[in-house]
Image (cartoon, rainbow, N blue to C red):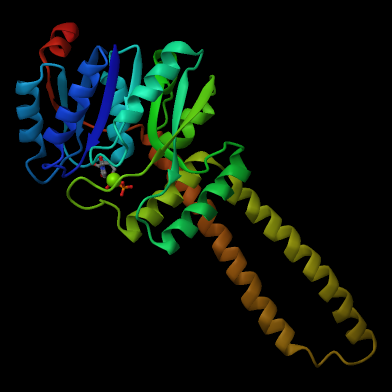
Length: 312
Ligand code: UDP
Ligand code: MG
């Protein structure tokens, strides 16, 4: 059986469309399936729509969060509740073409693959600045963690083994896109064109994207901490050169000059020290958050008879 996890946040107009499109696609191809809609604390009638979808199609499972916990948490909640032999993650807005699920399914079924990654062959409608930002972000992640993330997306098929491996990872601060690569396993790529949003607007603002990027980097690599050390070494070299210069001035009797250098050095070093402290502080706050070991999400309601029976 194939579990299809669909994180949904304020997607009232997309739920029924998604359930219908994916459902009929599965039936056409004779694939046994379940559709797990994770309602990530939507402020609109998304949950009611999921109920409606569950009435129409008994394969629909609904998971309701007590508040908005973010897409990452929704993905992991879906993986936790999925019962299928493989799990597909797909966006609710139909920007990930559902037909690609069939390609993924076939690859998984025929070949010896455990992870099928959906990669964007074209990025759809995005601003140039956003594209440039993504490029820098992914290539720096790539260099620091060694996982190829170019044109990565959250659109993936994972074998049960991989889902279990991910469910066993205890961290609170997750970065799904990279974690599914980190666990390894035999991976294949499938390319897809990003479609236009079915309805509604993207949930990402510039601020939330920057936050997401910083979170992802710090939850996945400690490279910024090492960058602090490199900065320190560079400063040490600079200070060696200046030390020679200063001593030379002192010995040749010109030591009164050079106040500008002192001021510049002061400004420069103190800003580097402060930035470094900030980076370290950021990691400490991450440790603090992890150590509190709060749950990634809180489920207020699960909608599906099978699920409740198996939990009893
Ligand atoms: N999403 C979510 N929680 C959030 C934000 C988004 O579950 O806090 C879901 C959203 O419903 C959609 C998917 O994540 O199914 C991708 O969101 P969106 O389309 O806004 O992102 P984009 O496609 O613009 O990257
Ligand atoms: Mg989208």
